[in-house]
Length: 341
Image (cartoon, rainbow, N blue to C red; front, side, top):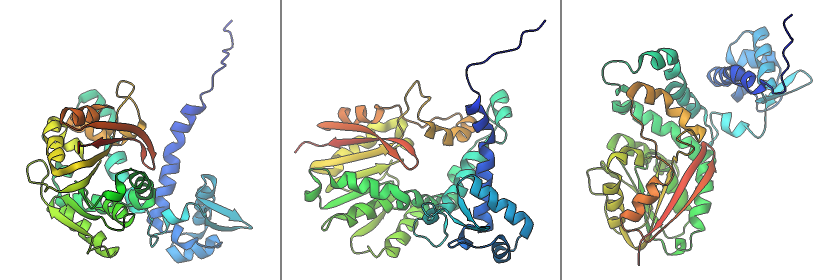
């Protein structure tokens, strides 16, 4: 007779993984339908359906599901956004992250549709560079990704930078490969006398100019166009900041960091805010967002933890202080390098 199985462990974690796409699809559908913009206050499913042009009955079921996963609240048959999440879900909110989440779905989730085939057969033939060579996509991605800075990372990093003992003496900073330039705006806003330069390629720098104008900081923040791998990045900076951009220079990191060292004034500070892989390159889970690209291109631009800090020391920086930051996008490494006075 076959013995009944006994099990002390739980498969709950597997159940959660299997059902996680349901939550993601509900969120993305809510953004596409625009229901969050109709739930500033408690409203009925019929009213919301009329506002977004959807089927009343199915809208009610959909709103119930949004409530189930914690995106909405329901009281006496009426629905509203969760107050603490509403600033991130309302299109006209300055901290709206909807476009960024939709871009993440396109660039991180959809590329995994053929995951089994990629694992079995390897990368497709030909060159996988369509997304990386499209100026339009770069501009779109840059504009959308500003949301993770305005959504919390900007405030978080500005507090850290402002706490540096050198901060009061800073007068000029460079946001290297700064894209949208939002970090530069937050840092300059926290300092009464510091000016900033955002350095990036022309199609991306144009987006930075949009945000600089939107926040009225044209007198204090400017844009310099170019490729930091090959072009002059300027000199006379007290602070150089680089966020999630050094990956493009991983093949020759010392050359770029040497250029950064030379561009700093004596006593200047270079801060890199980047990925840092640990546990035999299996952690943190922020790596999963790049899996689709890695499987298709067989290129891995991710840094091992400590890789950037070691390059900083090789290139002449006096000291490096490193820490892991729990950012809104996940765990990232912050390496703070100081140049001799």
